[in-house]
Amino acid sequence: MTTIALQVNRRAVEVSAEPRTSLADFVRDKLDLTGTHLGCEHGVCGACTVLLDGVPARSCITYAAACEGADVTTIEGLDEDEITTELRAAFTREHALQCGYCTPGMLVSARDLVLRLPDADERRIRVGLSGNLCRCTGYVGIVRAVQSVIEARRARSIAPVADGGRTLLGPAGSGRAVSDRSEPRPVRQAPVPASENAATGGISDFTPATVLDQRFTLQHPPAKVFAMFDDIAGIAACLPGVSLKSPPRPERVEGLIRVRLGPIAASFEGAARIERDPATLSGRIVGIGTDQRSHSATQGEIRYRLLPLEGGAATAVELAIGYTLTGMLAQVGRPGLVRDLAKRLVAEFAANLDRHMSGMPSGQGAPAALSFWSIVSDVLRARIARILHRG
Image (cartoon, rainbow, N blue to C red; front, side, top):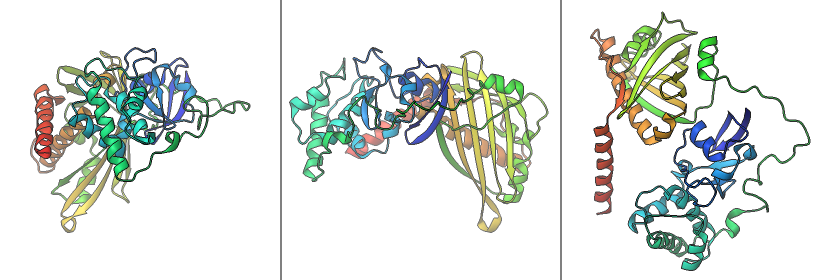
């Protein structure tokens, strides 16, 4: 195993992987960034295209270890990007996508064209997109979408960037990747798998691949809420799908959490450690777990902070939920679904916590679940909102 350190979507990442691991498998399996799709795995179809030091690159034929020190941007990292936002709207307007499998790589390549082409020349756009194959659309809508964004940006006097910002010759990623191997690299210890860590008692810090921020309010004073957070068994009883395996201790809590995403069920068995700071009414829970059935593993971190409201009569609970998921479930655990599940889990936890502190029984027991019908209804609501917005 080799420890690879690089920037992914503006976040420092240091993860252990086999030397033969491709960049595509690295971001999908190690970082849960499954927006990067795998098609031909020969660098031909372009579905796996990412930005490597700002340059489009085929991640399926790029070794992750060769990207040491580089800056990688996947389609998830372009959520707030101005050009990509315009392209997404144009793709919808021009009916430039059908099944959507090629779309992430297509958007990354199209963004590069919008950035550097001086005008919306159809031939140059088609040549620029020739490395991205689509089996559905016939390309007409895609070309029109890219043309419309280039025309709109040039009309707003946004000048092209010469060579798309490329400053060095050589392979994509050579701009920042570590090239001087004359000095031996320090030997790093490969991370111990979660299951082994749980067995030996070590629960180490980590850098989450995804962080979700949540907030809820309790009609109880901060001191009372903070004291409740010290009742590990009580908190576990309020968390949907969580059960303890043994008497809890702050330095080690062993348990099980059951999760259901539609028809997919998982039971993560593992351990956690708990840190608290009474001076700031804050704390942290760091945990690891594995699901033997799917051969998936997860690392999780919950940071919380309590803020007084209504003159100290109520409390705002701020949560930062970070996680890294690997294995089969990482392939289906799309960020949108995980965010939805996290919101539902936090809402149910808040309701259970409020009932528990008010002396009423909580509704704990069932797995933390995101049903098929809730997924469908959310998709329909989002589409209806977009249609009304366009109208």
